[in-house]
Length: 114
Length: 116
Image 1: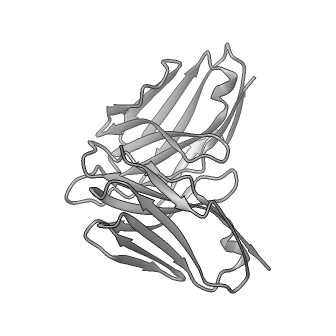
Image 2: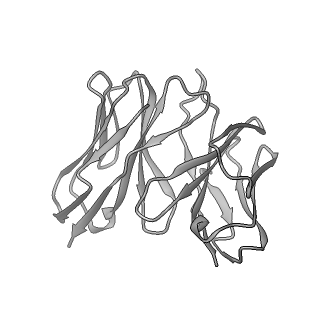
C-alpha cells in the first residue's frame, strides 16, 4: 500500500526566506505526483504536477522536483511571502490504479511572518 | 476556465433530513470525484465517476448516494447522516487517467456540512 509522508508537519519562516518542503512515498511505481495548496476552510489549488518521466516542474517562484527511484519530491519556494501561508499537500497516483486514486500526504502547514 | 463549482458552500442538516450537494465543471473533464476532508487531515476519496459511470466506491456508507447526471454535473445525495459525517466535502475533476492525459486534478472550494 502506497504511503506518503510530508516533512516537516509545520514550518514558520520570516518573509523573504527560501524554503523546501519534502514529500516521500513508499512505492516508486507512480503515474504522477501533484502538489496542492490549501487555505483554511477552502478547496485545494493545484500548484504543480510532475509526470513520472519528468524530473522537475517550475511555476513562478515554485519549483518541484521528483526523484522516483528514491521515492522523494521537494517543493522549493523562493523569496517567500506572507501570502504563501497555507497548507501544502503532495499526492501521488500509483501506476496500478484504475482511476485517479490519489494518495495524499498529511501536509505541511507553512506560516510566513512579515 | 479551470473552475469546479460547488453548491451550497455551507449546509446544516438534521439526522433525518435529505439534502444534496452539487458540483459542476465545464473543462470537458470525463472523470469526477467526491472527497471528504476532516479538520487538519488530508482529503479521503469517496467516489470516482469515469465517463459518467461509477468506477470507484471506497466502501462509503449507503447514506451517501452519488449521482452523475451528465459529464459536467456530479451530485451527492445525503440521507440519515450522523454527526460524525460533518466535514468539508470536496468535488474534483480530471481527464481519465490514460496515455493522453496527465490525470491532473482540479478541486472545487468545497461544501462545509454540519450534521446536528
